[in-house]
Length: 329
Ligand SMILES: Cc1cc2nc3c(=O)[nH]c(=O)nc-3n(C[C@H](O)[C@H](O)[C@H](O)COP(=O)(O)OP(=O)(O)OC[C@H]3O[C@@H](n4cnc5c(N)ncnc54)[C@H](O)[C@@H]3O)c2cc1C
Image 1 (cartoon, rainbow, N blue to C red):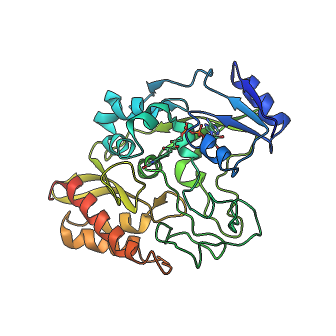
Image 2 (cartoon, protein in one colour):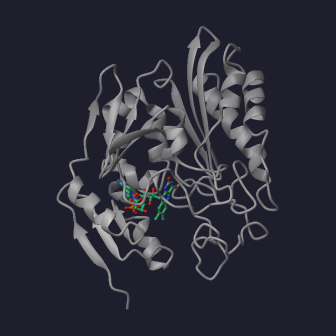
Image 3 (cartoon, protein in one colour):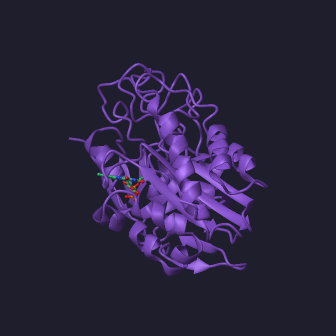
């Protein structure tokens, strides 16, 4: 039997002290809906669980200029239903409600959702080769059953998709992630927070093992209020995305003044597509230009044997999201 220490941290400093004492062996726990699953599968084996639920990080508050600061412990269900989120950032509310089940959303936290691990079946099975779980062991997904895997941001070491719906919305909304360590705080643009696998798929974000996510800021913008999330999956509920798109548009008449586009289900990280945005700005908000943007978004796709269908599905998902957002669907 493995020995496990459990520590309920009273404040951020206590949590950071415990994490810093054993950075490679300790793990913070939020809702536990991902971490405990992976511990049961022996994929993650922390020796110390640092429970951060006692930290004062459960607030959503307005910041100067009309943005929102969301604490790392705000539950996914509370965030989805928050009146200011529904009014100012509907894409975030829709993305959260498209994820998991009501029970899971009641437990899951903002910080834990940002950091949830891939659902790659080879990552979750310790008898399989996986460079993400065990660096240098190989990648069974490359020539395995890779129907759920990524087509963008892939490498010859890893093709695991980032599974989060919420992350796709945060990527589209120009969010920033706030991170705290014993040496102080820093903020990271959300689109730079996660890393593509490259030669080190085990390194998934810029967060250091002894740091905590404390929250996320959503800036005010001219586009966020006109935003939608579309998710395509095998079942109508309780299934991870095959493809998804988070879209925000600011229109001047029928012309796109500003656009934000992010894709889910297809990227090794939440996939912001600046190529699609460039293809939209200054153009009429119509199907012809939405299809051109979708072409641009998937241009660099590198499918494998079983996931080639995702390329066209992602294009169609994006056209659908843009059409709904523009009100022409
Ligand atoms: C059956 C099932 C179906 C699901 N379907 C979907 C779906 O369709 N879409 C979707 O998006 N998600 C889905 N999920 C995933 C779910 O959204 C995540 O499990 C959840 O968001 C994780 O949040 P948590 O707070 O429980 O994380 P935890 O399990 O507590 O933590 C996850 C990771 O984050 C770390 N961590 C947690 N908080 C912090 C912090 N503040 N700072 C630093 N590190 C931290 C932990 O150490 C751990 O490594 C599903 C999950 C299950 C079990």
